[in-house]
Length: 303
Image 1 (cartoon, rainbow, N blue to C red):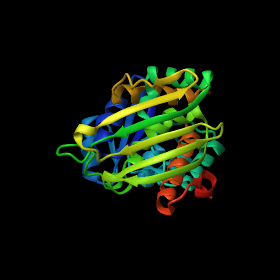
Image 2 (image 1 turned 120 degrees about the horizontal axis):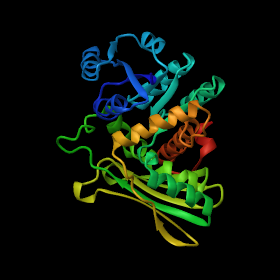
Image 3 (image 1 turned 60 degrees about the horizontal axis):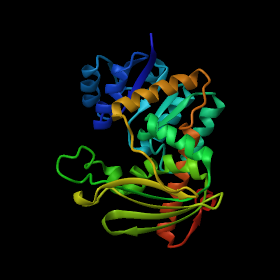
Image 4 (image 1 turned 60 degrees about the vertical axis):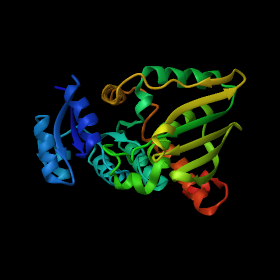
């Protein structure tokens, strides 16, 4: 019998990534599904041979862990509820829409000695993990140039109708993917400056504890011809590009399940909820910098 999971969420990502990966994983059991739309929860549960729940607490009573594929503010609330019920957490990025909410969740997980994993997709590919480990160990980096231009508001894109993505934009949706690779290499961010550009682009400069500077540009609304994803470190070795992920989202999520299970067994986990909190703190500082029109210290933005 594998680790019993409850899936919270019924959208495209929940169905095609979380649900598919949990159903296929030999060490996991998709025991139940809950969603804000009971009809969608019933359909998704039926697809994977699971039970649909109309009450979150009833689902939590029947599982060991939850996988959450919901908007970040909804996720933060339900993850805290699950943690207080003693359940391990497999979360999506960003874990919350404020560092305060993310910090409260991280504190609860630590107090109850629970395992947590945040699914920054590419961090669950071996090529990216090896790059992050070796680059962090090597040091000597002066900074990074990173661009993630997505184009989700085109006809037929399954994420284009997402209200939270339209409201919060690329900074909060794809920004975490870039930061998940950069922060372990360049170190914690102390100061952020950000500007809003055309097509809902956020341009962000980060000052890191060791003096390195990051330059980021992210959007969900790039012209299709302008889509891009690159992360390039620079330093004593010159310019060194980070690799892309070498696994599909479903395969990567299966690795995330493996790592949650290993964390329950006592292994270290670099992409836990504490790291998720650190990413949210940078995003919040960037958003505040845009609104104030000046540089913002990360501590200033998060209180």
